[in-house]
Image (cartoon, rainbow, N blue to C red; front, top):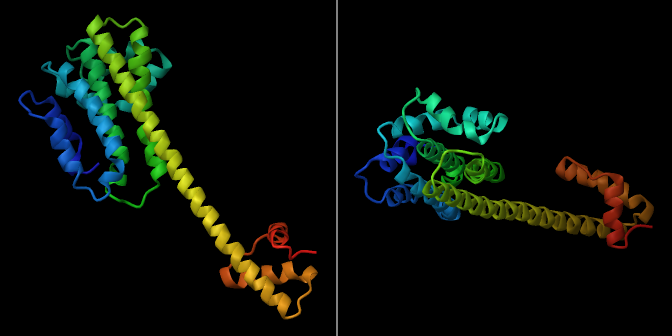
Length: 258
């Protein structure tokens, strides 16, 4: 993610006690990206998660906690996966030089860090960079799935949270789950668009083969020689020819195969 809406800017306004409407400030910056509108729902979902984290990040070492959770996000996630959700707060505190913070503060720092990483995953898409949209949306979903599992399952693993903290975690889990589902529909939409383009390309190719086949037949080519001549023509025109069975299948579709 570039400095236009990067880690320092986002955490700066979300952790600054006197900051007013941090969501609006981030959205204003993101809106400057040329392709922002296509991913506005994904960005808004992440900011909703950050908004829920902010009230819990008021301790003196909140910045230290979130910085550690951001820089060591993968390592913390791996430790949680290998051991249990119970180790999450201690892992965040350990990477933050054992700063004194409660479990919920450590969890909120980790969730905020995950959300910023997710925003970084879709930032190139919003900026209109020529990257694989599906790959970046899947990265986005990985961070959301981490939030969903940590906040959903973590509260059931014996963490020392009071009822308000449990409620906040479950709310974060719901937000992350909903955002992940939205992103999945967007991913399948991309796959659908790719499939549509593939089919359109196939239709164009098949129509060109049909035209050439009729031209060859009109010039006296026998049907049993048509496939080989078409493959030679396609190789010359495009540099690559269909296999014989594939070409025969197209000719059969147009009743041009004996």
